[in-house]
View 1: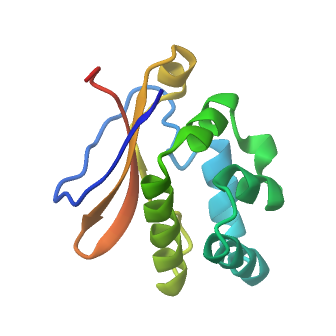
View 2 (view 1 turned 180 degrees about the horizontal axis):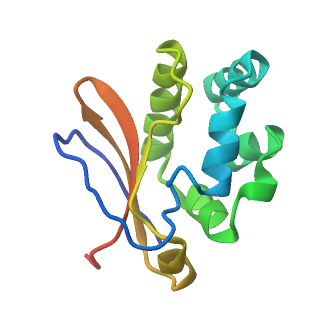
Length: 140
């Protein structure tokens, strides 16, 4: 089961082995970032976050579920409500800034997901900017 935290942190983890789930080349990330260029997509995304629509349902409602792996679906479904709230705020902040890239920093590879490596999802704040961070668990 993934471990989640919502905490403030000054550093960012960097890692490059295999295809990163949050890598700009990951299908769901590519599709989501592409959608952020569309004002209707952005408006729908904001409305769903403001109305507390479950994260998996948001992905489905935006038509991106074909790009979501079973592992990512399970991680999203298992997130602690406090982490989900942090993700919502990070996304709304991103929309308020008119950014067109999801606030995601992920060092988890598809190979790690396939192997069942536990994932830690947390929302970190650096320079007053919230970022959703997903990292392989160190086994704690």
